[in-house]
Length: 158
Length: 137
Image (cartoon, rainbow over all chains, first blue to last red; front, side, top):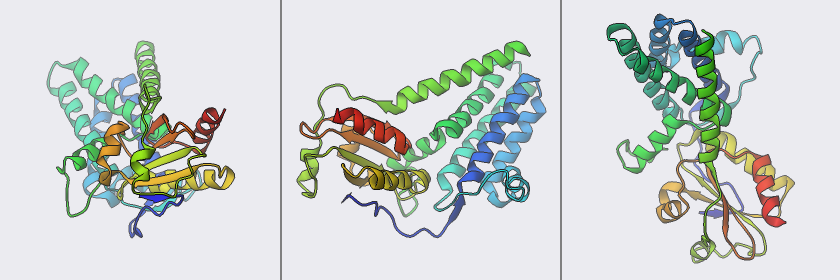
C-alpha cells in the first residue's frame, strides 16, 4: 500500500500498443455485426480464426498486422505505447475466439440458429463494452481465475 | 436486415447501460474503511476526501490508463488523499468494497470517512473529479 504516489509496480519489459487493442476490438465489432446483419456465417468463422491465431501467435494476428502495417503507417490512429503485459487481453481474445468457433459450428452444422447468433452477438456486445467503456470482461474472468489461483504461473496476474 | 439491425442496436445499447450501472455503484449504508487502513498507514489527512486505488501487477489498464488519469488529477486537483493498493494483497478491503475488477477506485468522503462511490474498471479524470466535487458539496 502506498499513500499519495502511484509507485505501484515494477519496471515492465513488455511493450504494448493500446491502440492496437482498440483496433482489434473495433474490427471484431464491425465484422461480426456485418456477419449478423447479412447472415454471413463464413465471416464468423473468419473472425474466430483471426482471433485464435492472434491469441496463440500474437505476431501473426491479422487485425494486429492490419493495424501495424496499414492503420498506424497511414496515421489513422495514433499509437499509445505502454510497458505492460498483453496476457489478460490475449486470454480475453482467445475466449472470444472460442465462443465464435462454437457459434460458427452451431450455425453451420446444427439447427441451433438462434443460439449460434446469440453467441456471436454476445462477443460483439462484450467487445463493444471494452471499446467504449474500457471494461474487458475476458480480463475480468482472468482476474477472477487468478484470484482462485487457477491461472497462477509464478506471479500473480490480473 | 432491418430487424437484425434493430436487435443489434438494442443489444449494444442495453449492454452499454447495464455495464455502466454495474461498474459505477454508490454503496448502500455506511462503510468506514479508513480506520482499517490507518492502522497501517498514518499519512492520511482525514480532513480531505480519499481515493482508494486498486491495481495488480499484470493489469494493462492500471498502468496505461488509470495511473496517468490519477496523476493528472493529482496535478490539477490536489485536495485529496490517494491510497493505492495491490488488490491481490488486500483481500479483506477488496471484499468489503465489493471490488470486482482492476483498475478500481473508491471515493471516501472527508470527515465521516464513508465510502461514497466505487468505480469498477477504468475511471477517467473527469469522472473522479466530478465524484470528488459531489462529496465536497
